[in-house]
Structure formats: C-alpha cells, structure tokens
Image (cartoon, rainbow, N blue to C red; front, side, top):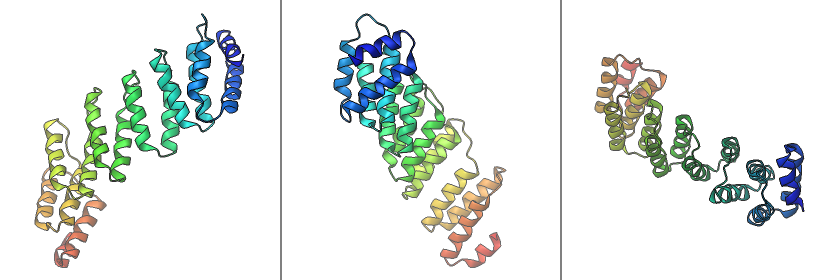
Length: 250
C-alpha cells in the first residue's frame, strides 16, 4: 500500500520521494481525512522507525494543500501517540496561521506546542499581544502577557507598552497605570512610548492637567518627547478649548 511504501522510503532516507507520495495520499483523500490517513500510517508502521519523517511530512502535506485543520489534527494525533514533531514543522504551521491572520487559532496552537517543549519567544508573545489589542480583544491580550512569565521569560518594555496601549484604547486608564506600577516593580523602566500612551489616555478623557503632570514627569526623568507626544498634547488642548496652551507646546 501507499502507507507501507511511505515508511519504506523514509526508513531508507528517500525523503523527497516519500514527500511526493504523502502528497499524493493527502490529495486523493482530501479535506477532513487526517484521522483516517493517520490511522492507516500507524497501522502499517510495523517495526520501522521512520515516524519523525512520516508524521512531519503528513502535517506539512496537509498544510501545503490548504487543509489547515487536518494539519493541526495530525499534530495532535502525533503527540497523543507520543511521537515527536520537529520544531521546524511546528514553526511552519504557526507561520501559515499567521499569514492567514487566524490569530486565535495561532494562540491556541502556540500554547499546545509550548506544552510539548517548543521554545518560547518573547518576540512572538509581543506580536500576538499587539494583534489582540488591535482587534480589541484585551482578554486574550492579557492571557498572552500572563503566559510570558509562565514560560520563564521576562516581559520587556515593549510587552508592557503593548498591553497598556490596549487598555488605554478601551478607555481603561486605571489598568494602564497599574501596568506602569508593575513595570517599575519588576525593574523595567517606562520609556517615551509608555508616557505617550498614558498622556493620550488622559487627553481622551479631557484630563489635561493630569496629562501635563505626566508630561512634566517624563521630562524630569530625562526622557525626550517625540512627535507623537507633542501631537497628542496639542490635540488634547485644542479639543478642550485651550489653544493658548497648545501654542505654547508648539
């Protein structure tokens, strides 16, 4: 059978031929066939030790055919049967999901592979947080932030700023300032972006005195305001009828 031949080719390191044959099987069986194909491959395994190549190849074949859920199901079946999936294969699935902008699916899959030993990446956590904040899904953004320390990493100023911006966009200034306090407590120094985000929060709520205080605090700390900081303050004062103060800043 095709499955027996796939095992044979992988065992004898004829990997490109095996890949082509796996692709044939996936194409013929089509969408929703992951469980049946996996079972057939498992049944024909015998004593051959070609598991890594075969199951990794199967996941990749489903992925390249556009059968995303089959690829993920194959990954789950592989790990359930205690076979190892190379990190490179996991990365391909993640990249494919990211490309399609299935961010909730990305997060779910990322959590699964982390549990199986996939190396955690602060950069990737920050990207996911940014996406969820942009979509207004602060609950998921907070979950991603909380997972950073769970997996032995330390949130950076970018991590804090990203989540803070998410809360401020939703009008939650209290949570924004709670994060600023948490930053300081963990030894991470707020930067210009941190202050710009919080100043923007005050301006949105027409709390211009508080915004000015925060601006002064930033200067005392030796931080140099950027264009965003100035524009935010000027816009805030203009909207609150204080064109004179806006002109002073300008």
